[in-house]
Image 1 (cartoon, one colour):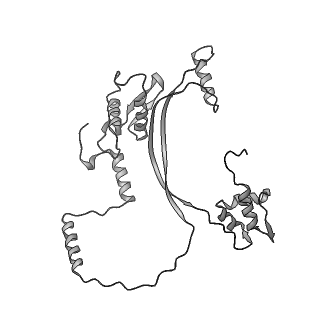
Image 2: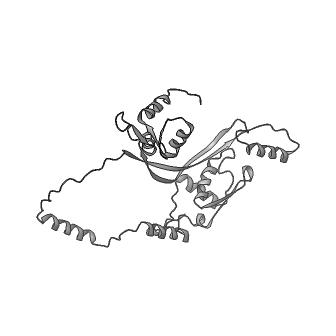
Image 3: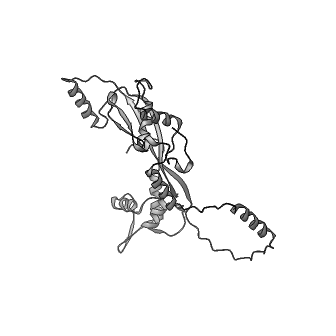
Amino acid sequence: MKATEPDDRSTVRLNSTQQAILGWVVAGCPPDVYPEDEYSHRVSARALKNRGLIEISGHGKSWRATPTERGRRWPEATEEDHRERAHLARAAPRVAVEQGSAKVESALGRALQRMPRRKPAEKEPLPVKKVSRQETYMRYKVVVTRVQIAEKWVRATDEEDAARKVQEEFAKPYSYFGNWETKATEVEIIEAEQTTVIHPSKLSESGPMLLSLKDAAAALGIPYSALYELTNRGDIEYTKMGSRKYIQRESLMNFIATNTHRGYYPG
């Protein structure tokens, strides 16, 4: 595969192992390259399929892999790569830096440094509203591909009947028992998003004697609907005023103490 210019390169990035397997598939999957009793190359091939570089069909001895047009031309860019680049450019526009702009920016910076600096005017402190402490975490979507092999004796009339019985067992959860052996595993991160964890508000022993369901749920750190269900089941005592329900602070504290356990708790 010949080297290309950065603008003409594919947007798909592959490691050395994946590049070797892609070259093997483009060459027509010649035999005696990968041992028949190993399946690590098939796991990496699955990652190439997810990137749209090859197509996979069959299982076991009938397993086949064929390159797509994008896979044959890799690492050269295809129309699909150009479309992806255009989409990324629209989603996150970048300011083009013209030749010589670094010198202009440096001259502007020196001019700004020579200018007298004004003392910033003192401002009154802004009012700060106290909110619940929050922590930000990242959540990752992970695709795990694992190849496993198991052997089992099946009583059947012929090979097709034996294969059908095994397939029927797979359709039932936890029904197929065998000595499973993992041959290859590949983990791929395909997506990430930022999440925020809101910690429950601290419930002090002093304050109003009655709490609304909304305030009580916020103090417990559970949804309003969950607390409403607890009151309907009688797990938490409540006081009713008109059509609204309120929970005594003492009842809320007793509920927390009663349902706090250590170690294994059946039910």
